Length: 278
Image (tube, rainbow, N blue to C red; front, side, top):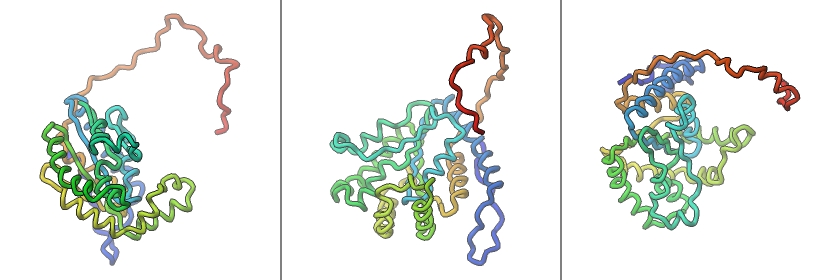
């Protein structure tokens, strides 16, 4: 198995003991190395028919989207599938709670990343009052049993909670409000959820206590520094999977065939091309 662990930097010289923000050049270099390992993981998953689920949870603005993008931007979307479900329909509300998630579980040779998952019930649904106390308690009771069934069925299940601090969350929300490139990230739940910081903290603690099991443990990621959070998450995923580099056949690029040759550029004259403004 390749060692996908991120390299540790020396201690920063700040009096508060916090590390300096990671420089872009160092981040890009390490991200490229880890993404290359994800490509090796991808080939191993396809060759062995492995099934993997990665659950990413956390408060609003914790950095889930950026972490998922870092994981998936260099691999095939046919192998690494991202599932981000909208609010349940009336029909889905009448189903068994886990049913809408299970239909997205991986088949052989797939990695499914849940951008929020069945743990919505333990988080936003609990805090915002979208489920009853009975539904909430039943979820906490049955979730570990369900996850054991998933793991016993041969699926590798990894759960990550991205932990963002109060000040950093406030800064990110402020940026979303003022930056037109980020405003789309504001959901109807973000600002009301901001007023319920401690309710979310209590829900997080209860969730971790009830569902942090030996067969499906939770791993917490400090995400105030987005770059380090992404690298640390990818490195940890790689360290938890016993993948090996799969040998690939050497590929030789064939020459362009000349049979039926004609001037294929002349045939494009008079067609509508996009104006070349750049």
